[in-house]
Image (tube, rainbow, N blue to C red; front, side, top):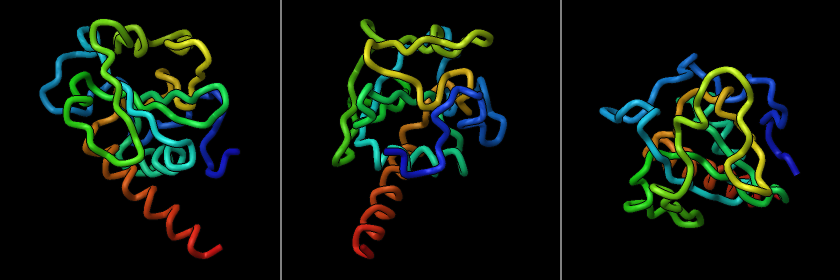
Length: 155
Protein backbone atom coordinates (compact mmCIF):
# COMPACT_ATOMS: atom_id res chain seq x y z
CA UNK A 1 0.00 0.00 0.00
CA UNK A 2 1.37 3.39 -0.97
CA UNK A 3 0.11 5.91 1.55
CA UNK A 4 1.94 9.00 0.39
CA UNK A 5 2.48 10.90 -2.84
CA UNK A 6 5.74 9.12 -3.65
CA UNK A 7 5.97 8.07 -7.26
CA UNK A 8 6.53 4.37 -7.91
CA UNK A 9 7.64 5.04 -11.46
CA UNK A 10 11.14 5.72 -12.63
CA UNK A 11 10.34 9.04 -14.27
CA UNK A 12 13.29 10.76 -12.66
CA UNK A 13 11.24 13.28 -10.69
CA UNK A 14 11.41 11.64 -7.29
CA UNK A 15 13.96 13.16 -4.99
CA UNK A 16 15.05 16.05 -7.16
CA UNK A 17 14.64 18.60 -4.42
CA UNK A 18 16.91 21.54 -4.87
CA UNK A 19 18.58 20.22 -8.01
CA UNK A 20 21.42 18.67 -6.02
CA UNK A 21 21.91 15.61 -8.28
CA UNK A 22 25.44 14.35 -8.13
CA UNK A 23 26.44 16.18 -4.97
CA UNK A 24 27.54 14.34 -1.88
CA UNK A 25 25.59 15.66 1.09
CA UNK A 26 28.12 14.72 3.75
CA UNK A 27 30.82 17.27 4.39
CA UNK A 28 34.34 16.36 3.35
CA UNK A 29 33.46 12.95 1.89
CA UNK A 30 35.41 11.67 -1.10
CA UNK A 31 33.76 11.62 -4.52
CA UNK A 32 31.21 8.88 -5.13
CA UNK A 33 33.62 6.96 -7.36
CA UNK A 34 35.66 5.96 -4.31
CA UNK A 35 32.84 5.27 -1.86
CA UNK A 36 30.91 2.29 -0.62
CA UNK A 37 27.67 2.80 1.26
CA UNK A 38 25.65 1.34 4.09
CA UNK A 39 21.93 0.63 3.99
CA UNK A 40 19.38 1.89 6.53
CA UNK A 41 16.20 -0.20 6.44
CA UNK A 42 12.89 0.89 7.93
CA UNK A 43 9.25 -0.23 7.77
CA UNK A 44 7.65 0.98 4.52
CA UNK A 45 5.09 3.27 6.15
CA UNK A 46 7.71 5.24 8.08
CA UNK A 47 10.09 5.15 5.11
CA UNK A 48 7.52 6.57 2.71
CA UNK A 49 6.79 9.44 5.08
CA UNK A 50 10.53 10.08 5.45
CA UNK A 51 11.03 10.07 1.66
CA UNK A 52 8.33 12.73 1.31
CA UNK A 53 9.92 14.82 4.06
CA UNK A 54 13.38 14.53 2.48
CA UNK A 55 12.09 15.32 -1.01
CA UNK A 56 10.47 18.51 0.26
CA UNK A 57 13.40 19.73 2.34
CA UNK A 58 16.88 18.34 1.93
CA UNK A 59 16.81 15.92 -0.98
CA UNK A 60 17.08 12.17 -0.79
CA UNK A 61 19.60 9.69 -2.10
CA UNK A 62 18.67 6.41 -3.77
CA UNK A 63 16.01 4.37 -1.95
CA UNK A 64 15.25 0.67 -2.42
CA UNK A 65 12.08 -1.25 -1.59
CA UNK A 66 11.81 -4.96 -1.01
CA UNK A 67 9.68 -7.06 -3.35
CA UNK A 68 6.72 -7.12 -0.95
CA UNK A 69 7.07 -3.38 -0.23
CA UNK A 70 7.34 -4.11 3.50
CA UNK A 71 10.60 -2.20 3.99
CA UNK A 72 12.55 0.63 2.41
CA UNK A 73 16.33 0.93 2.30
CA UNK A 74 18.09 4.30 2.24
CA UNK A 75 21.64 4.37 0.87
CA UNK A 76 23.85 6.27 3.31
CA UNK A 77 27.63 6.83 3.38
CA UNK A 78 29.82 3.94 4.53
CA UNK A 79 30.53 4.04 8.25
CA UNK A 80 26.99 5.06 9.19
CA UNK A 81 26.25 1.60 10.62
CA UNK A 82 28.85 2.05 13.37
CA UNK A 83 26.86 4.81 15.08
CA UNK A 84 23.29 4.12 13.95
CA UNK A 85 20.87 3.88 16.89
CA UNK A 86 17.44 4.83 15.58
CA UNK A 87 14.74 2.59 17.12
CA UNK A 88 12.68 0.64 14.61
CA UNK A 89 15.39 0.71 11.96
CA UNK A 90 18.60 -1.11 11.15
CA UNK A 91 21.77 -0.01 9.40
CA UNK A 92 23.74 -2.67 7.59
CA UNK A 93 27.42 -2.22 6.82
CA UNK A 94 28.09 -3.18 3.22
CA UNK A 95 31.63 -1.86 2.82
CA UNK A 96 33.89 -4.24 0.93
CA UNK A 97 31.10 -6.62 -0.01
CA UNK A 98 28.12 -4.53 -0.98
CA UNK A 99 26.87 -1.51 -2.74
CA UNK A 100 29.31 0.83 -4.46
CA UNK A 101 28.03 4.37 -4.94
CA UNK A 102 30.05 4.76 -8.14
CA UNK A 103 28.21 1.86 -9.73
CA UNK A 104 24.85 3.29 -8.70
CA UNK A 105 25.26 6.98 -9.30
CA UNK A 106 26.48 7.07 -12.86
CA UNK A 107 24.59 9.25 -15.28
CA UNK A 108 22.69 7.94 -18.27
CA UNK A 109 20.98 4.58 -18.40
CA UNK A 110 18.78 3.35 -15.54
CA UNK A 111 20.57 1.27 -12.93
CA UNK A 112 19.38 -2.14 -11.81
CA UNK A 113 18.85 -2.54 -8.03
CA UNK A 114 21.90 -4.08 -6.31
CA UNK A 115 20.02 -6.96 -4.66
CA UNK A 116 17.67 -9.60 -6.00
CA UNK A 117 14.06 -9.07 -4.95
CA UNK A 118 14.38 -5.32 -4.62
CA UNK A 119 13.38 -2.36 -6.74
CA UNK A 120 14.02 1.36 -6.76
CA UNK A 121 11.58 3.72 -5.08
CA UNK A 122 13.99 6.57 -5.80
CA UNK A 123 16.48 5.41 -8.46
CA UNK A 124 20.03 6.79 -8.47
CA UNK A 125 19.37 8.73 -11.66
CA UNK A 126 16.36 10.43 -10.02
CA UNK A 127 17.87 11.06 -6.61
CA UNK A 128 18.75 14.47 -5.24
CA UNK A 129 22.06 13.22 -3.79
CA UNK A 130 24.47 10.30 -4.13
CA UNK A 131 23.51 9.10 -0.63
CA UNK A 132 21.23 10.40 2.09
CA UNK A 133 22.95 12.30 4.88
CA UNK A 134 22.57 10.16 8.04
CA UNK A 135 21.78 13.11 10.33
CA UNK A 136 19.13 14.40 7.93
CA UNK A 137 17.68 10.89 7.58
CA UNK A 138 17.58 10.46 11.37
CA UNK A 139 15.59 13.70 11.71
CA UNK A 140 13.21 12.75 8.89
CA UNK A 141 12.58 9.31 10.37
CA UNK A 142 11.81 10.90 13.75
CA UNK A 143 9.39 13.34 12.17
CA UNK A 144 7.80 10.53 10.16
CA UNK A 145 7.29 8.44 13.32
CA UNK A 146 5.65 11.38 15.10
CA UNK A 147 3.37 12.00 12.10
CA UNK A 148 2.31 8.34 11.95
CA UNK A 149 1.67 8.31 15.70
CA UNK A 150 -0.52 11.41 15.42
CA UNK A 151 -2.50 9.96 12.51
CA UNK A 152 -3.01 6.68 14.35
CA UNK A 153 -4.31 8.51 17.45
CA UNK A 154 -6.91 10.29 15.32
CA UNK A 155 -8.38 7.11 13.88
